[in-house]
Amino acid sequence: MKILLLDIETAPNLVHVWGLWQQNVGLPQIIDSGYVLCWAAKWYGEEDVIFSGINKVKPRSMIQRIHKMLDEADAIVHYNGTKFDMPTLNKEFLMHGLTPPAPYKQIDLLRTARSQFRFPSNKLDYVSQQLGLGKKTKHIGHELWIQCMAKNAEAWEMMEEYNKNDVVLLEKVYDKLKPWIKGHANHGVYEDGLCCPNCASIKYQRRGYAMTATNKYQRFQCKDCGSWFRGVRTNTAGEPTKFVGIS
Ligand SMILES: [Zn+2]
Image (tube, rainbow, N blue to C red; front, side, top):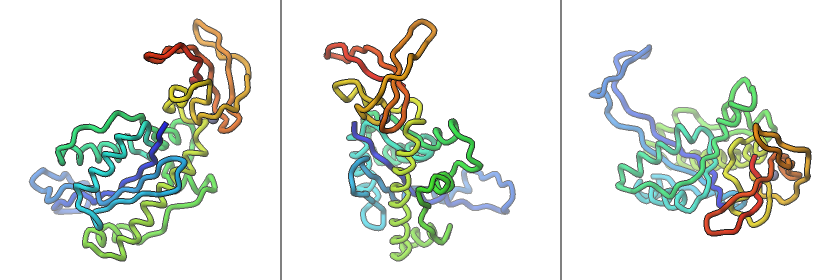
């Protein structure tokens, strides 16, 4: 299974406002819609962090390149990407006249953080520091975005480092949270024999039974990532029945 870790950075909407507190912004007040400044992505298990930004290429080629990668990916790992990164990219695809990329599964680590734990903050920076996995690259705050929009080369260097580091952190957090992810795209469907649905490992042990309302299943625990799963017989289109693990 090809898993892509992804993070995008965007420019804010530019609007005219008459005050700072509790503003209702009408459509005529929108001067410019926000847009993607850059993205960083990494194929899980590979070394390179790929970066593309409008400082180096035209917006259309930047968007086409990530569209192509999404086409090749079976699953995307992101942090709040369900609500932010993916719809933002979809809007860009639509605006550039591109059709939807091939369907992919989404693994949103913010959703896992929110549903499985009670951290005082679910921000990637906080969670990764609590887990001892490092922190986000320090930057100059909102000014960095302003300077990048103004095409400041030094600011863009910082943005690239920041964006790439987010993806590196994302991968570390992904590895740590893996056994806690519910509904992870199932590796078993891509592999021949029984394996851990969350990490594809074939090192697992039988540990009791999983009971449902109507059935009793052999239950396993992955010795690599710690995921729990049960074995079920399934029918993959055009292939003989096989035994797969589901979490
Ligand atoms: Zn596993």
